Length: 510
Ligand code: MFK
Image 1 (tube, rainbow, N blue to C red):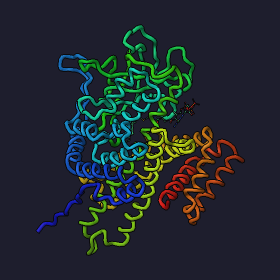
Image 2 (cartoon, protein in one colour):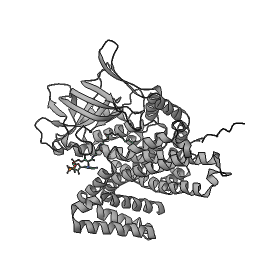
Image 3 (cartoon, rainbow, N blue to C red):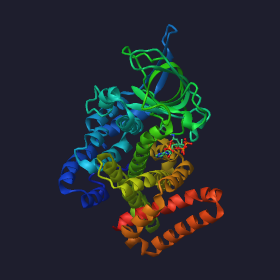
Image 4 (cartoon, rainbow, N blue to C red):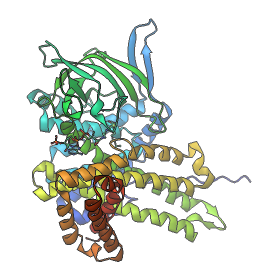
């Protein structure tokens, strides 16, 4: 009889994840954990049933750009699958963004949200991307928006009702630069409109993820403003009029990407697009950093979720695949290979949920000055470390399936392609390493990190690994002082990785 391989099967991803329960139960107040765990069980079930089905549909029925109607009228529609739409609605219903702003769990609200997102992301076909920008936009409005934005857009972004829920885009990248936005060519011209949208934008935005969103936050240079990034301001626009026609925006094309194919990423031309200024004129990069610091936390959580799913599949396969007379999970080298990925995963988990808690404390006003500095410094290193490690883990998981891993319809090859974006968007590994240096220099984060490690992390620093990492950090900083800025920059990635390992190690043994 023909041999048929049993496929790897997923079960409720809350129940199959003892680390999630163990870690959060240890750290959270019992009443918060009781409420949260009931919700997470429900969400863990959705992740292997409806959400999985919808995400598979969204991956099969990819976005289509329809530039013209049959009669030559420019329409610029993006057709999305029903699966994508259902996943967006589910995100609203489960409160994936709302949880962070209702703040019913006080400073733990972001941890609650992080756990929801962690379970949602791997079955979301990257609807998690618009959610990240939606959340970031809500934060930027909370900090800088006027009453109108707070009364209107903010309510939509944080709604639990799919009918009123909006997602937001974040348009920074232009042809001239993605990491370096100083050359931004989009120009904002004052208009005489009386409805608050008293600016018109002209320019091309080169990568705009989730172009189906209802609104966007973007950078543009008001006419006459200085060149360089200091001359940029933050703007808000609503993409469509009440008839669902784009407001002076042309969709030039959808991007043909390595992964995240279900996510509509487009090039846009703005041709007098009506916009509102957010906050005072100028300081656009500073203002939008409140948005991208949130999306960077999302990126860490989604890296973690993606990594967990890859490992779940690898273990499930190791449980059904037999080679050399044993299940793969009983082959010592196979087993240790997967276990090593779990060790790094535990560290990434600790680091990510630590950042989520700091963010929640900051937003609820319970963070101390030192905790705010820690948040500023740890956000970029958590993002860069989890993003990079997730790619490594997904690659290893593809290999753990042998030749089957390389075959498209098995599904893990897609996970590797998708993972690659996690170390690129929202700041590449190098850009974030330099952002970590920015935090050390501008916010004087080094003594705060040192104090944290020497107190909360004392047990880890006493281990040979912790000691070696700490000594190397001190030596790099000392050499940086001696050899100058270029040297320090050349070591920024190493420094960031070491500090990520140190904080994660400290959390793991605390
Ligand atoms: C699944 C998860 C989903 C994730 C969603 C994905 C959707 C992706 C779609 C995208 O939009 S991807 C594009 C994202 N683009 C980036 O992340 C930009 C990457 N480049 C950087 O981060 C550069 O470092 C930066 C653009 C910020 C450099 O700009 P500048 O103007 O040359 O930096 P400068 O002069 O050092 O900083 C200007 C101000 O911002 C300073 O404040 P002051 O005005 O008070 O002096 C900085 O301190 C502040 N600043 C910069 N980065 C900051 C920050 N403040 C807080 N946090 C930060 N991270």
